Amino acid sequence: MTIWIALFLGAVQGLTEFLPVSSSAHLEIFPWLFHWNMSVDDYDLALHAGTLLAILIYFFKDWINLICGGYKIVAKKEKSTEGRIFWYLVVATVPAGVLGILLEKGVGKLFAPYPNGNMIVIAVALIALGIVLYIVDKRAKSTVKLDRLTFKQGFLIGISQALAAAFPGTSRSGITMTTARAFGVERESAARYSFLLSAPIIAGGVLVKLLDGFHFSAALVAGILASFAVGMLVIHFLMGFLKKGSFKCFAIYRMAFGALIMIVALTRVF
Image (tube, rainbow, N blue to C red; front, side):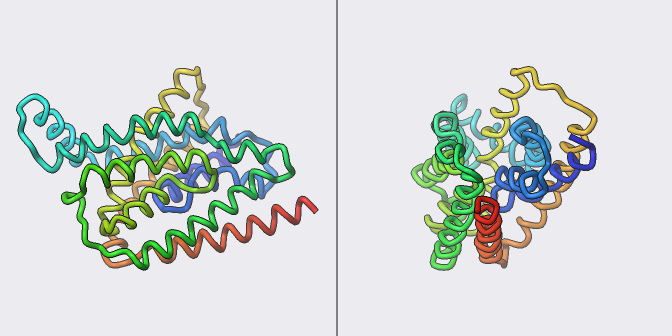
């Protein structure tokens, strides 16, 4: 992988990780579109290290408050919103991580033997969740803030991440934000909780990759830095945008981009 491709894919990762459009799908789509002879699986999780760093730094104060709150609930029996949310994240992450490993790219693997089968699965997932996100976001009431989130809501939002593992193109942030909106969680709180949920899952994946003996190159480091820088900007943009904006534009993008990929995939098959 050249440094320019690494920078490009890093920017794509940073741009799409936090928007409900599926970063993993985009990292697979662009090399396929441009006929780059490379395996994205070797770089996907590594590039996620940049966006993980962005989550940890941007929400640094939140993480400190959450960890302290979680500790105080156990050690001092002091209840707080931060402590409660911390344990929601912990309880939801473990089963979501296990299911994610068991279901990883399950549907995509079924269609992989067919010409462009995985791309067709990704296109369908992009379109399908785009439609669901549009309908849910439009009809949902914004009545629940993050500090009013119940255990059931927090747990089910976390578990929904497993669907993103099973269906390539679904998007972890997309499915968690959609589920949160279905529960009436306001958009900004839905995004914040989605970002916090993603950190342990991404961290686990990156750790596994490192333990497997993954070797960093200069190009890959450049890609990680690009994903970090762009990721910071995107988080800042989205948290401000969702104070007044909706998910409509992202839903429309998913449907349009998915349709484009479907057309290209079918054209290449026939």
